[in-house]
Image 1 (tube, rainbow, N blue to C red):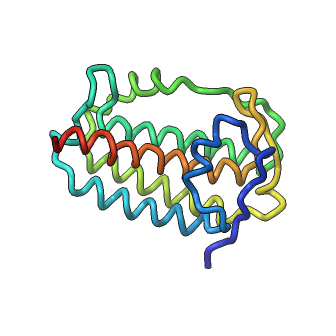
Image 2: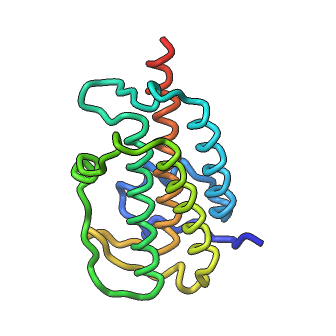
Length: 179
């Protein structure tokens, strides 16, 4: 059975996260939404060619495959933050520079099968993490990169961030590719 995880109040996440929060259903179905986005992303990616996966809509923009690795990096980091906050760790966690992560990801050396294997394994781990957290721990607040957030807000952030980038792949990358 999937856990009902109430959508966080606005004081549980930083203002910048609103762009992600507005993309998710606010009905407590975080776990179902994470599963659904996993399935839809796997379907989307499985229908793309190697050339499409390596496509950049502008010279200095990430390829679709690099966007996927960025989603993975972000989910892994935000999942760790959620665990720390849920366990009431009072450490002020550091931020991360996404451009540096991308630059050093060696994504071009990876197969899409390898990337998607990591994506799926991580998503299933994220689902298991949030399904196992108590309501009390989900509401605990921590600080990362100078911003306060609750553990549950980070779960919704993970989902919204994923949806944002998949929407960008569909509405920008693929539209440009198919002109």
